[in-house]
Image (cartoon, rainbow, N blue to C red; front, side, top):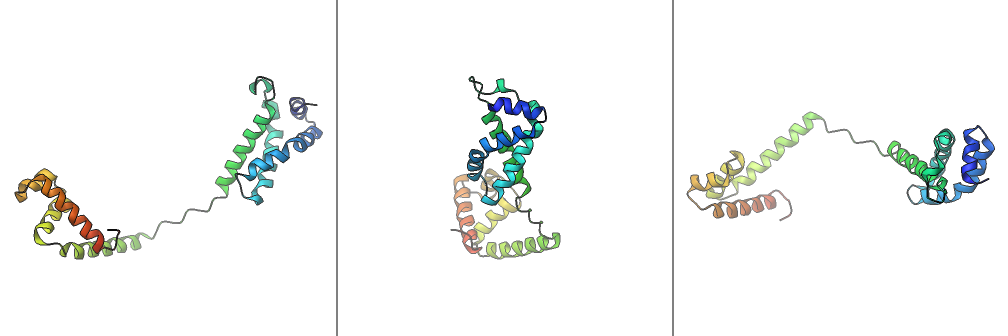
Length: 173
């Protein structure tokens, strides 16, 4: 029997057809799954694949395959791929819980204290520029007008201030 006939027999409840299809296709399916999954997962996914084949045999349409009618391999691989994705989703490590809200507030407070200390290390004009630009959220044009300097100077001083603060806070320079 060819693959299409075996699948039709399975749809009619013939479990020997499933065994024959398994012996014919399990080796290459296992090899392809082995490129996607850990070795210990391949057997589980292969079993789930053929369970899906058994359950879905009635929905198989040989004419949906390649023009020569050899669509069973593609159909089997589609089921195996979906089963591999399901297995990977079910077995991925659990997400870590978010930090405790109080710990997050404490971290933000420390970060703000560290930032304030670093900003204090800027010279007076750059501290003023920092306050206007980043704490009061003013535009470059507004800061330039307030400080009486060109917009290009605001941008270059802001760049130097950020670089100084990044270094002071232990980030990459």
